[in-house]
Image (cartoon, rainbow, N blue to C red; front, side):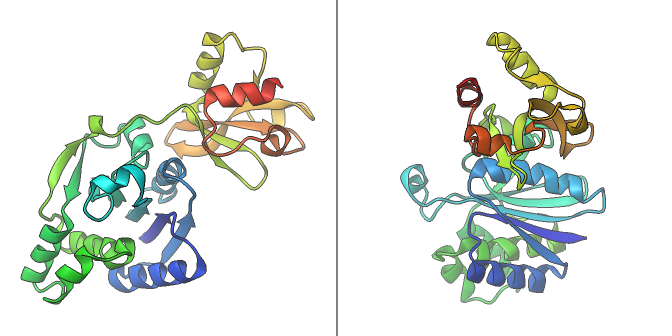
Length: 267
């Protein structure tokens, strides 16, 4: 069993505190994956579920802006939770963080938690001290003060006061790059067959050739391959450049949608 934190709050101080708190409360080894967006969180969530290889664990996914649309919430986007096989996932629910869990059909609903109600229940069962509900409800670091406590409570009691949110209310993942690795390979939200079909729709099948794997791509050529990321037999398509960085050559970045990808590679 292992705990993995996926978060956009990952400076050295926040990382140290978050890992220490999660390890202390959940009693498992803890690692942290820093991301820059909710779409990056979505892809990493799938990869980390896959990485447990059936052994189970806890994933805490937190990408929680407080500006713009997030102002509709009293203190940032709510948290929700679900179980997939023997993995507990606790996540912020706004944005695209759960969009690829939706694509893979992992769940049909998420249990959305109201922090004041949940912490009141925790205090009533003596799981937390009586003074903590008010403090946690107003915390500016909810992924530290609330999220690991929620996960620990769920590991003990399996459920908490919450409301179901149908998966249909989670937005679909865009056809886009969700991660650029250190070699400059670009992981997309599409499976290889989907990517090829989209190119065909746009009349761009001659722009990017498909190959079985990286070893099959000719030197100095861009190719579309089935990468290692994904779940079970459904792995994400990756854009690669044999012998170089496709991201650097074409200025591709995480979040680029299919139209942007085609425009950049066509130039």
